[in-house]
Length: 245
Length: 298
Image (tube, rainbow over all chains, first blue to last red):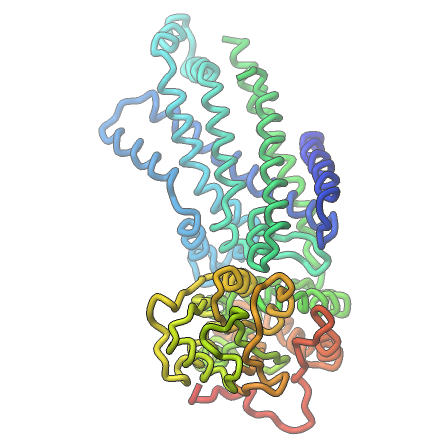
C-alpha cells in the first residue's frame, strides 16, 4: 500500500521538475510535496469513507421498493449540488469550539476537512452508483438467485456487472472532493507551518492564496499540478479495476 | 460467482490500499510539537507580505512552539476569536478590536506594528485627485466626478478604514461608479489596475505589486508625511480564557515575543522591494494607555 502512495508522489516529482522548467516557483519543493500529500490524504480518506457509506446505500435503495423511494433518490441527487461553502460553514459550526463537537478540538484540522469532503462526496458516490446498479438487468439478479446464490452473492454479481459505473461514481466523488476549495478553506484554515510544511493547506487553497496575492501564473501552475494528479489517480484506479473502458 | 467475488475483492483491496496510503501519509506529517501549538488568526496584509513567516520562524526556534496561522480579513479573524477557534487575534481595525474587547472575548490588547494606507488610481486621473491633500478630499472628488472606485467590500481592516474615510468626506459611496470586489488586497489591486479604478490600499501590498499595475499613487499616508487619517496600526489581542478553551499562556508568550526587542527588531528590518512598510511600535519608554483601552469614539 505504501507503493501506491509512492507512485503518486514520484509522479508529482516529475511534474514538479517539469514545472520548474517553465517557471521559477517562489517556494521550496518540500512545500509543494507537503501540499500534495495533504490534498491526497484528505480527499482519498474522504472518498473511501464516502464509498463505504454510499455504495451500500445505493445497493439498498436500488434493490428495494419502499414508500418514499422517489423522495430519497431526489434527496441524494440534490445532495450532489450542495454548495461547498455552505457545507464548510455547517461543518465549522459543528466542530467550532462553541459547537456541539467543540470538545474534540477539530477546527482547523485535516479531520475536519475529511468530514466536510465526506459530506460533499457521499451524495455523488451514492447517486452515480445508484444509477449504475439500477441499470443492471433484472435478469442477472434473477439468474443469480436461481443458481442458489446468497444475498451477498447477488449483490457482488450486481456490483461486478455495474463495476464501470461504480468506478465512475468513486472517481466522480474524488473529483468533487479534491477540487473543492470552499469548505476546506473554512474548516481547515489553509495553515502552513513556518518551516513550509503544510498542515491544512491543499492544492486548491494554495491556488486561492496565490490568486489573492495576485500571483495568477503560479496559481495556474498549481492548477495544472492538481489536474495532473487527478489524471494519475484516474489511471491508477482504472488499472486496478482491471478493465479498459 | 467465485471469479466475480474475487474481482470485487481485488478492486476493494485496491481502493483500501490507496486510502490507507493516504492515512499513512497524514499520520507521518502530523507529528505535533512537544511544547504545544498556538493558533493565531492573522490579517491577510501581514501574512501575504511574508513578514509573519520570518516572525513565526523566529518564535518557533526560540520557544519550540508551533504556530498555526489562519489568515483572514480583520472582521473574519475577530469572528474566529469570538468562537474561541483561535488563541490570539491580529487585527487592524480599531473599532472592531474595541468591540471584541468590550464584548469580553478579547483581553490584553497591544500595539505591535503600524504601516499606512495609500489612495491609488488610474494614471490619467479622471477625478483629478493628484493634488488632493487628504484621502477625504480625494474621495469627495472621486464621488463628484463619479469615477470608478473599487472597494474591498469584505469588512476587512482596509474596508473599515475606507468606510471611515467616506464618512469623513461626507460624499455618498453609492452609484454605478462604486463597486465592491469582495476579494483580498492583491486581487483587488489587480482588478483596480485592469478596470482603471481608484482604491484604498495597504501600502505594503501596493509596493509589492506596483510594477505589474497600471496604477499611480495619489495620496500618501503618515509614513511619508501624508494624510494622518491613513494610519494603519496593527494590534494583537489574546482571546479571553475565561470565555473560551484557548491556550492563554502560549498566547501571552506570543504577544510578549511580538512586542519584545527581538520581534520588534525583525519588524524594523523587514522590507518589500527594498522599502520598509511595517514599523515597530510595541516598545515605548513613555506610557501608551490607548493601546489597552477601547476608545468609545471609534
